[in-house]
Length: 113
Length: 110
Image 1 (cartoon, one colour):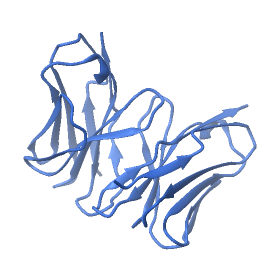
Image 2 (spheres, one colour):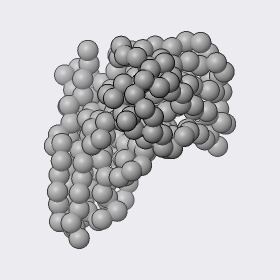
Image 3 (spheres, chains in turn cyan, orange):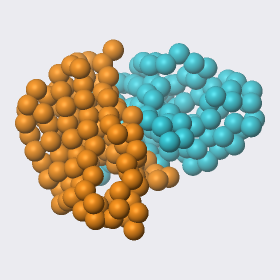
Image 4 (cartoon, chains in turn orange, yellow):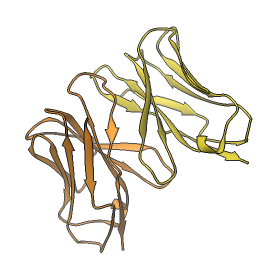
């Protein structure tokens, strides 16, 4: 069966510090991968998605970036965090066909001080 | 771009009452999916509807996809405290992507 791992679960960072969140998927190959952000009590904002190694599509321009160095690894990064980057970050995967269900990791709660 | 509108934003019910959340799109959707996010948790896929007019049931949950494939609903019969959470619909867009609604947050008073 497929599993998705996302870490860390909680992170507190000062403004201006860098960020690296990692997500890995097991049990499937060539998945579509996604990064979402969810503000408290709000909906899901798609940040990035990837259909293959090195292929990243950005949905929202901001100071975040994503990379996919391996087939089942997806990384969310920032060089300098802003207060507005606080939120709940979710990684998800789906099979590499259109409109497939997405399966989410447990998420990372990021607080910027 | 394509959008999926979901109403209501919040719903407070007494345990045992029914609950319904609605999704609407201005464009035809290839499919509709429903997810549940428990408080403090992550969204979990519930079901996918593909055919026009399709109705599916999961115990007390009934999911419908409109005839024009532009709207959908989730109905919960006789809510329980375990139903608490936020319910998201997600429509299949023309680019093969999923378009999430903003969710309906359900609270159930025992």
